Image (cartoon, rainbow, N blue to C red; front, side, top):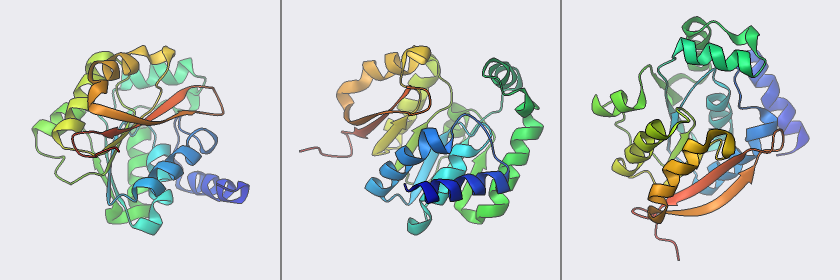
Length: 212
């Protein structure tokens, strides 16, 4: 992305009033590269949080008219403890803040955006994940049991590509969960986010994609 494109994307974030840990500096280039590689029709995001990642992926996939489904149960105690720990107390407010971000994204992107207010497992069991998804952005539960579930959802839905956020020692559950099924995936690229040195791992599902 050019510096001008990054400024434009940040201006959109400011106008729509989303927030969260994903930032233009940390994620925009990663999202752009993965989206341009896949040219997705449908993206599944696990973990809306305060909406920045949803907005960036919707903006960066406009030329493909991609749709995005985001799943998040909004667990206030977990969210608020985390916002305190990373120095963002101004975003504390639990469901009220996060649901306001959902409505703002929905108002700006219309039927390109769908939000499911549930845990990913419940959404899967209830039949809410009913599109043919081309990409999963996995950034919800960062502990081993939750990541195990999200990976199994991706495999069951035959999603060809997954982008794992926070693939690093701070959230070792992400790496541990992936290690158990890595023979079913091909690692395409390990990204290091510029702002904090943490990683994102982009993989292909070998049950769907044949890597030469």
